[in-house]
Length: 314
Image 1 (cartoon, rainbow, N blue to C red):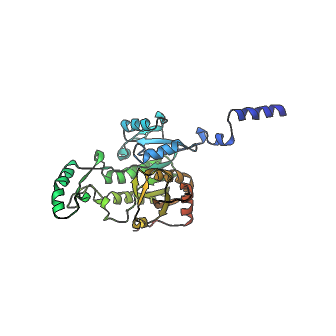
Image 2 (spheres, one colour):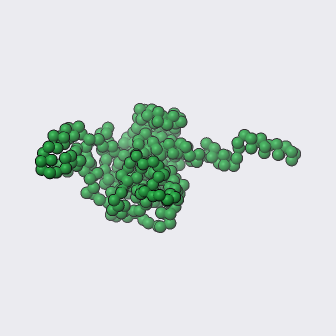
């Protein structure tokens, strides 16, 4: 019998079986829903989860073309892991199928502005006049913006996010992570003027609508991690700069207020484990560093020990 037992152990070893492989088998992985998964930040979150043996990601995308785009960028994406649903219409539709196993949600949806071509033409014609008057040749703030697919902030960043949070509740999810933005305490921030006319009318206030959705999430009782990144950039390789974490838009006082999308994605994945069972809201940027850099998990663990609380009364 002893020899048979040894033979079985040897066979299991040869087949690559181990306690860790059993733990990380598909049936034991946490299923995480990433909304806005075809977007620039959402796709990075989805990719990191796809490459992490602890998780099985599901991608919620707006259209079939968005799903096709995601699969082209990440060929390892199975068709079964893509769910097509317009988050702005969640309240009026039946619950999307295939989400029953999801235990956590990472919200990466956001209204997307684009520059009006007419305003670009006007700004170009204004350059000679500005130079004569010794002003900046091109005043970026003079440009007018519109919203992609008519998805302005109130619809996408408030109503859409609230609908997603309600979906998480209906599905019995335990944790919601939101990629938001810094600046929510400052109504005068330029981003709030995007989409508005010179007289202040129009559909803007993206930071204010995001903050209103955050307040809704805070009031639900769900466990959450709300991440407010600074300016999102794509030209910094992930993991090459040091995370800086704080609360209440204090990081806006820094000269450098940017962070790579890939680093934000790393914080989202880290929050699934480090912030589980917690209610956390934080701001984040990165800074140059020549020393050994802590991981996203280590940075979040250190931040939680500081017991800093985000003040939504501001």
